[in-house]
Image (cartoon, rainbow, N blue to C red):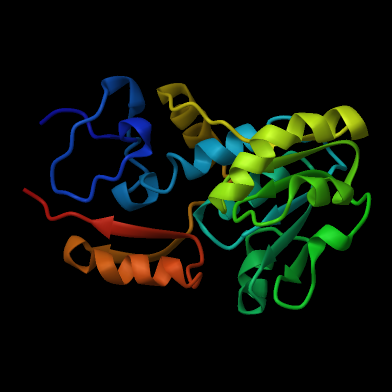
Length: 234
């Protein structure tokens, strides 16, 4: 039997199947101590967090919007590993989970609007963006950075176009986070998992036939960490 590998599909295209094809440059060897389910949490979510928190320094104030999902787990952990103070935004019923994975403070998005907190954060990582770039920058300190990762298509387009204009006017960086796929990124995050800088968190593991149920749970925002689909062996 060959090496056990894990990684991504080119272009972030879905691959819900027993067998898939991808470029070997997007695959890394899976360490023996890491299960396949745990390994599946690292690509994409880990890469996003690794890029987003690359410039975080001790004492920085970081806000993560949509913090309770797969990406949020990695962003919170890596920001804390870098010495930041982290505010996590999600549903009220996820507050205990968010504190457990490292958040210093939690915000219930249904009752509080983090964008009203003027001049408060050095980095905002927005995993579920729906606010105008002309508004979100107000929550940043001078020279702070807003990184949009996911959210509404019109907000993505608006952030990509208007972000540089906001930056020139305010001295802040507002834009869409671009994360090229690479084996090096996967290996870097795996090394951080080995150091226990971040611990993969799996919400539920579903058999492949139950993929609709997994997507339904994802759609209503109930997951705490990664939802994993397990293909049949052989």
